[in-house]
Length: 355
Image (cartoon, rainbow, N blue to C red):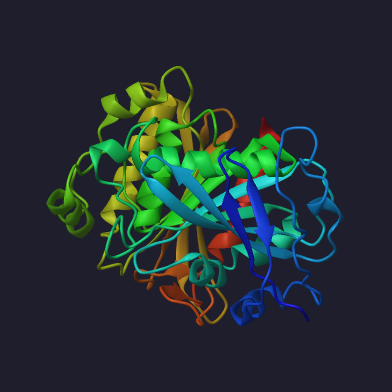
């Protein structure tokens, strides 16, 4: 088996080129989905018509590529997973935002999203937060400049998303975003500020929009879960676009981000989806149990009368601040919970299919 670690560098044109070297870490999770991992082809451009989606579509086997995105705030690294069955046909894109002290390799391994993407034929991109932006590698979800559309880290992540969309044949109705902890809170920011770009969001151990505006209030919101979402600011940020569907995971033993934050997030989401007409929503509750693992409660929200599903909330009983159903070889994971990556993938595709 070959392992790859292709490095992309954004040139002045904004397009990446790739060169290759080996990386033993990649085999930890790529080897589970394919026997052969190939090196990425070198090319200088993802120009709209010429190089776009052609060279890579012919590569056999899955690919794990590293990229670098230039932005006024600095240079930001990211990694891209391309499944073995990608051949240039329109496919889905999932943007994954890691939590504190994590990076793309750790988060990809821990969540198992590459495995889920391989079976679903999706491309996955993992933007990375650098220590120059936050010493703990946290996304700065709480800063006002990072909670608006055209500035800060929200615009960086949206820019990386569009860069990957320019390099591959991505169905624009199947672009999703997900994250954990600080990454989940930033994913909420992106879902609110870019509802025209993302079709749904997966929020694991996150918080509602606008519950903090600096580090101290962020810690208060995380620990208590009693801070109020800024609905008017969220509506202003969304503009004429409708709110995107959410699937939310949280452990009831989470002592880092209080479980009440999931309740506040879903309350915000219902208000954004339904306005003052919350009577027009129905909720179904399912109690489940992972074999030799944790029990859970899943609430499914849909418009009344058997209408479209616009949200799911999973409360995992016994789970702490960890990715549910994750790989124990990575940080902040707990294999005893339901597989959050697989359930997010299911939810994302169902939402897109229902449109």
